[in-house]
Length: 141
Image (cartoon, rainbow, N blue to C red):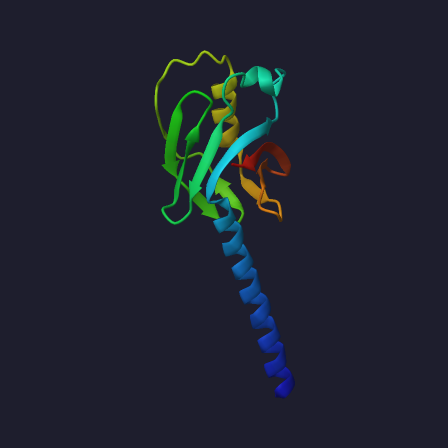
């Protein structure tokens, strides 16, 4: 009987520690992040974003995501489950004329492909992942 109780207590503490870690990871998202890498385009990163780098901001308490695509501001509902994240929901976006070429289009279309995220242990780097490929990397502002 004592052995069963010990195993149950040990199992419970593992469950609770995992749940706490998940919460910590989600709360680490809060704040503003600046893009410093994006996969795909044949144009250099600085060529895509010569004037302003895209940013993304999270408010996990309000389930809100917002940011700037290098030209226009966007905002939408944050859809998150553990380390899974979904940017396929429609977002409200300003409609300024952008002179940065493909930068905004590349950013917004890549964002839609993201399926999960990872934050480094120090909380300073955010990776957006599609399947198992890191597609975008941000640093905390």
